[in-house]
Image (cartoon, rainbow, N blue to C red; front, side, top):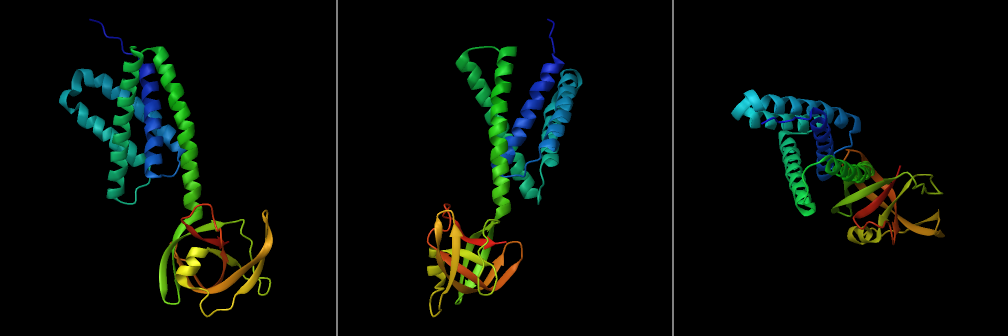
Length: 255
């Protein structure tokens, strides 16, 4: 029996699947988007997969699976930045889980449409994966932007210590008209938790926004330690009733 091996189709399928799995894993693990690196890695390892598969039918025998496992390890290792072996192991397992789920989904799809693997099925798969690429790419970029503008912090006031999430907002130009110093904005909930109004006279800070103008009551907070190591002491914080649409944000910093 003659077995035809279409090298070009095999390379295309592996390239698409490698790139797709790198996108999915990055989305699951909240990794930084590395488009050019992922394309190169996917293309190179698609060639390696072709060589392994072609030679494996003749000489590799039982070591075919270990070699394929090493290939996946190298893909994950080269594609992402790993702070430790534990992080790498989680990335690796996420990649494997994504591969298993994707393979199962494709098999289920072929069973539903009751068709053999063909050029039409390949084109449809490429189209669907391309749509997923676009969606996942924008999701990753959004995550990266959110990670860059948000961070954790520790605020201490009146002997009270609380872990919060802060947001860097380049649009926050609120400053004190009396001293010219920047003013951060805190939520009503954080103000009550730290009892910032207890025994303190407020400083009225005028603000201007799309929704209108007005005055915000500002108080001095004692200490703020950001996760990047920077510290703020004795700084002004204005209390807002509706600081952000996302409830986990308790403070908006003035850059």
